[in-house]
Image (cartoon, rainbow, N blue to C red):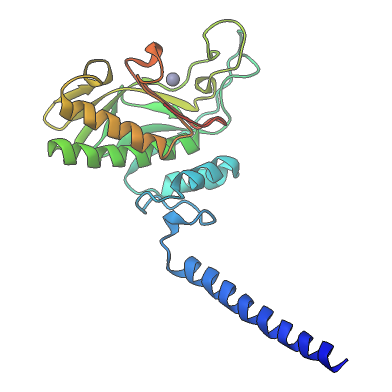
Length: 245
Ligand SMILES: [Zn+2]
């Protein structure tokens, strides 16, 4: 009887000891590790990319659109406005395509889009904002030039993945994918995926690093390495699949 009581006391002391150690460890991680590395923290676009950024973007995808819209609005140098809802009035994708909540995105003061705007679902637009900041850093690193423009083929297109009458709908059908063809530096230098993916080393390295940065942010990143259909552009989307090719 006495011995049982002693065991119980020791058991309690040891359990309390470990509870304090583990609890204190979690508290210290939460308090001192930068939020971009913590999966349970919300996305803050003023932070640099971290190991949890993609998961934080994904969480934004799953939360109510109001939260994403306020993140987009509060990202200071990000030029975008809410887009009107869109639903096609006729055609095969009438009940599928379009969006309820999206943004018209223009880029930033320094890095504009060519053509000048693109409609995007809100989490995609926030991922694009973070990505263009990374690509700007790459432009400065490789060419000592800021990134002036991102050339693109647009985001919204009411079509299926394979372009025929059946099969899964493309994320483009929901403005949840963006196709990027080239990058233009401040001095007018053009870096095109079609011409420079296997071109001079500097431009090819820049493009590969831009793809790697995309893989850290988007759910799906497809480049010329994936197939011939992507020889001239990166496909970036925030759909449910996960791919980095
Ligand atoms: Zn695409």
